[in-house]
Length: 226
Image (cartoon, rainbow, N blue to C red; front, side, top):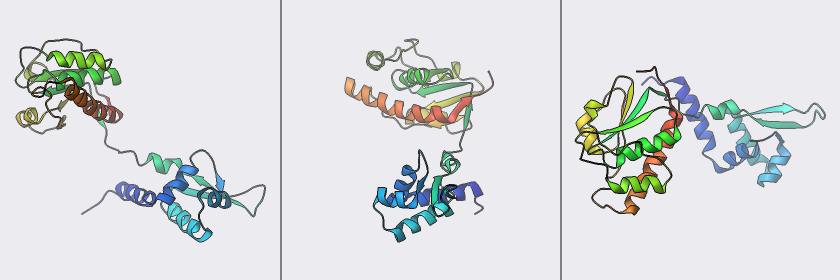
């Protein structure tokens, strides 16, 4: 299997950071450079073990060493920030709009659209594969409790909403099965709060959607207007 060289480099960095002591060294260097003796005292590591860890980190491209201009006998260890920035996933998504879809367009999808609108400048809306007559009242209550605004209280069919350039996110398994996979589509397996129908389950679903949206917004940039 041909492996992208950038994946191999990032894997090496992840491997280097998998040891708690090496992660502690990197965190100690986040703000400024330190001499080996300062690292040894701060982390309470014996000299030979510190030297080993520094060697692993240097081989992975995470640190460099600089001889002191004031005292040529001392060397400082510095962090190489670009190596850490390279750990950020390279997957990027472009979308002119995000459309969240569930079956009845009554709970998960309108909540997701409201959360997205509070987190991202990219427009969002929602739809259903088999829309019900109205949004669940607990959806509206959950939105109010968490300080997000639902733009509308009606429901719409996915066929009347989705247009070219949209990123379509199915937030329920049934909707995903009906839509199927494809370019510009994603699936989040989020439980339906309707059958339980308590504030607690709606708050739990709100939390799940918020966590996923907070992550997806970091990967998504605006696409061309549709």
